[in-house]
Amino acid sequence: MKASTLAIALTFAGAAQADARGFACPDAWIENRMPGIAAPGRASAPRDYFVVGGARRAIRPGERALARRRCGLAPRIVR
Image 1 (cartoon, rainbow, N blue to C red):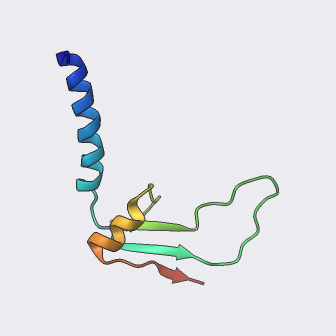
Image 2: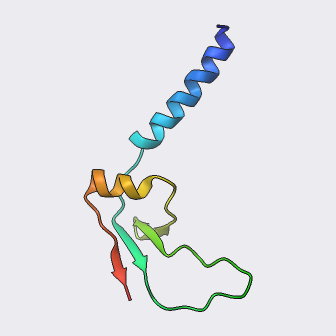
């Protein structure tokens, strides 16, 4: 295998591992169950999010499981 191909393969493998290792536990996990009206033809906003350092942050794929497993968090339900 050429050195450049090997470097690219290792970069992608390292990026996948870095996502799991680089996950920092959020301060809170909020699940919004407040009733709302969605505009016709528009997708509704995500119903759950993390709070990190006092700011709202969208949840990326796979982070819900990491928050449960590594941080012991469960969503706090807001009604």
